Image (cartoon, rainbow, N blue to C red; front, side, top):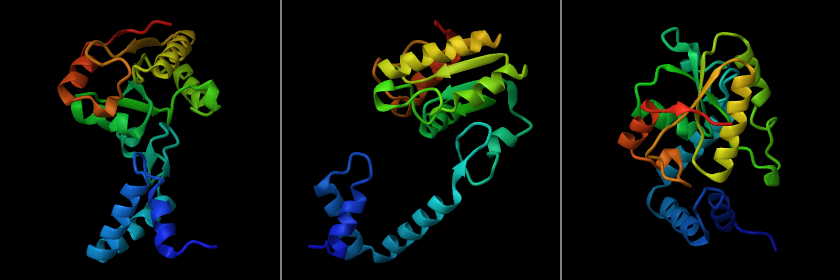
Length: 199
């Protein structure tokens, strides 16, 4: 028996992180009962975003253009590159610190059990940037999780092989935490007092 439109909508909403069957059902009912105009706007923006937002050719962040505004900006310090796991981590650093360098968004972290290796994280592209001679410091801002630490170790080795100084965010970040959920003050302090990365 095929699902009706309501069931299909509930199932579609469950793709969002942290949304279970009940939460998806509540969202679907709210949109249909109280905010059909908002539902139409949401559907249009989502379709437009999926069709038009890709990845920056240089840093792999989300971008509507081949090169994002940060990578294209002449006022950014090209000798500094900050490697982060996700676009949300990049945004957290951008909002909480005075960092004026460039970024490299891994779009994940090394996790061999999940089939995520260096290729999936675009590390060949990062290696080319580091070997280009323009980058002096690679700031490693992966999350302090087991996979994040393994990724940081790998990135530090890559940087050293290219003659680039690797540094790591400092104290104040909770072990097992996620950067996007750390308060601005803690993140700004950790970013400002980063030290040499081990690896």
